[in-house]
Image (cartoon, rainbow, N blue to C red):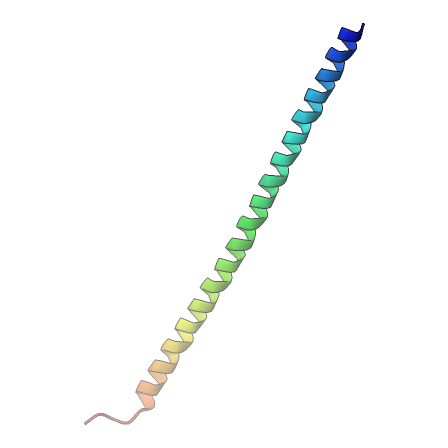
Length: 72
């Protein structure tokens, strides 16, 4: 009877260990997804800033070239 109880206890512990490992893997994947989402959002903001700075810089260059002193 003790062998049967030990076998059942071992099976329950193995199942709990498997569920714990699966939960931990899910947490890691979820954390990785959050990191990737944050990185994508940050890179999108950097891209938006670079495009805005490029457009405004080009506009300033064109306007100063158009209204600048004529070259001899």
